[in-house]
Amino acid sequence: MGDERYFVPEYDSARMTLAHGSKHEWVESSCDNARTHDAQEFLGVSVSTKNMTLLFLCIAIGIAALFFRTAYVQLAKGNAFASLAERNKVKTVILPARRGVLYDRNGIVLVYNEPSFSLQIVPSELPKDTSEQHALFEKLSSLTTISSNDLIQKIKESEDPYQPIFVAEHIEYTPALILDAAIADLPGVSLIVRERRRYSFDSMQSLSHVVGYTGKINSKELENHANYVRMDSIGKDGIEAQYELELHGKHGKKNIEVDALGDEKEVLSEEQPKDGENMILTIDSAMQKKAEEVLSHTMKEMKKKRAVMIVSDPSDGGIRALVSLPAYDNNAFARGISQDAYKKLLDDPDTPLFHRAIRGEYPSGSTIKPALAAAGIDAGVITKGTSVLSSGGIRIGEWFFPDWKAGGHGRTTVTKAIAESVNTFFYVLGGGQGNQQGLGIGRLTAYLERFGFGARTDIDLPYERVGFIPTPEWKKEVKKEPWYIGDTYHLSIGQGDFLVTPIQMNSMTSYFANNGKSYRPHIVERIGTAPERLIQPVILREGVVSKESTAIVREGMRRTIEAGSGRRLNTLPVAVAGKTGTAQWGKGKPPHAWFIGWAPYDNPNIVLTVLIEEGEEGSRSGVSVAYEFLKWYVEEYKK
Image (cartoon, rainbow, N blue to C red; front, side, top):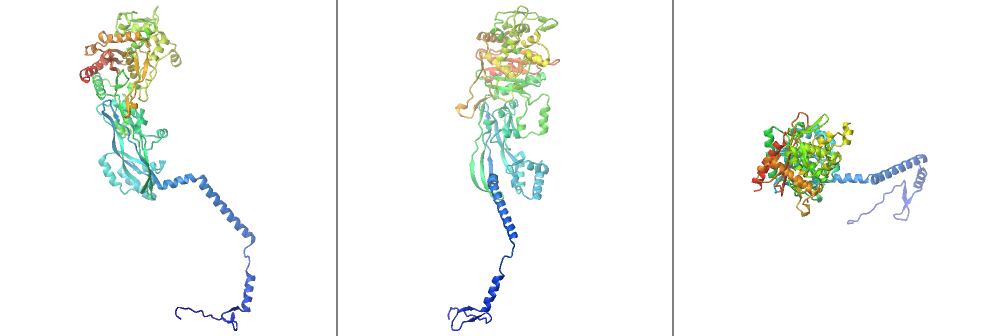
């Protein structure tokens, strides 16, 4: 009825009966009981005990192996696998710091950064299928100058698949636009904007040695510089190398969550970069340009190719001009110099990459005589009134040591000896003659060292050389010869094995210009904008000789201009002091020409050093360069 459902039992007469007089009571028949009993006796163990034992043993071994493997993965390799898992989902992007800008002392920009396009590959984002990869490399090869085999090799050599590999750099703007469209469908390949150095002094390439250049970081440099990455450039020479850490700054980074396809999903963390420090140099662009101009003009007239000129401020050691010719174009390195172009620079016999001002080692010739005169007075070997007869030279046995002037200079005092560069006077001063005692080799070398020869000036430029002071011990060890009086005579006039650098000569000249005190030469005046980063002058030498010795030498160097080998400079509208030098350096080769000096005489603000390799007489070529520069300085620059 309705939704009610009824159960109607079906009867199986063979198995069960409905008990009489009792409704719905199920009773098992005797036949069914019998079958059930038989079945119960048939059930039992059908696997042997031995087999069961082996089964349980295998299960136990499997569980133990699984346990130990789990422990190994979690404990021994946990960090490594966690790192891999993290890198599979987090990508770190370097936020490059901007390199510091360089200015001259008047605020003129010398070096800045300009945008540059680079083509890069991120190996982890490349197609996994080998054939697809090869197709991609073939297309890239057709778009660039790099072969597909080289691309494959670059990928193999990559230490980190998540870091980009640069395929092409320094791509100009228009080609970059075309390339960007061509690679739009290539996974793992992208065009990025980076910065490269721009050296803005094309008209005065002599600054190339001062500023230096940057180049791609190599493996050894990468190991020694924390926070640097493979894509970085690093200072290779000049200020770029000397102040690399200040100029480079510190990169930032951004951690980005990516999906399985490498698409960015979320920025997890970000650290902003710290840009490199800007710097103001002591270099005066106007002085640098003029120094290069007058030096180049004289070299051209004389058909000479190698020379140096230094202009410094004796009051603090600041370098106003540092010219080394020939020079080179820094921008060729910034753009990525080719192997052929670099080889051409290296093979050039005039060595344009060589910074002569701080690395060139030359015989000083007579420009060393002021220091030796001061040493003789300071040591009491001579006085201002001591005189020596110059009759053309000194003969020792079969050897003759000449004056430059035939017949000699007559009776000579120390100031005249400096002014006219009288060799005989300095032979006697250094090695003695007859009853006249000389300084001797021991005191000679000691005073030369006190004046800074044989040591660095510590100018803030890399790879400065130290020159050389010969000694009896050195000669015996190297040349297997004893030290003779002739060796002392040669050293006393700046010849023989004695070598100096132009920056050492400039420092010595500054000592006398500054009345007995010299400062460490330097190129950088200020780092950044903080007041405490202003570079303070550092005294390099003071009191090397007595004040009396310094005053007498100053008088002799002024007399050089008034009546000696630098008379042409006496026509300038400013009082100048100086010393010329003609340095023999190779048999059958023209001597080097030197001039050192300062102006104004009583209150100097510039010190000059001029060296023209194979320039013959310093009294002619060296003085000519000094004259042209000082004339401009007084008549144009100062006004």
